Image (cartoon, rainbow, N blue to C red):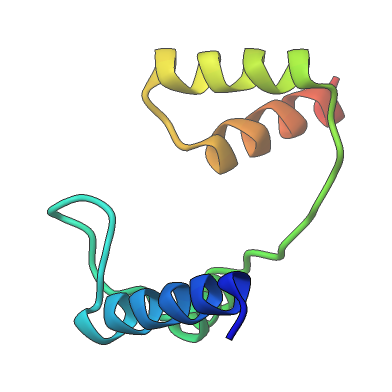
Length: 86
């Protein structure tokens, strides 16, 4: 095997071990089931909506979300509703 093939093989082994153990980031992280998450969001009437924004604007939104201690989705929804009402 080539050196790169060995490295790929080692990486796959590590990834498989992490997946088998249910590796998560942080002590409080839970295994994440995307299908269940999508179903919960759909039941709440949430629809995925992707947009591309300027990096400076995103930084302002993140700072405002941290300041208000709210999630980014909630903040953006609030700001859009206020903007559309004006």
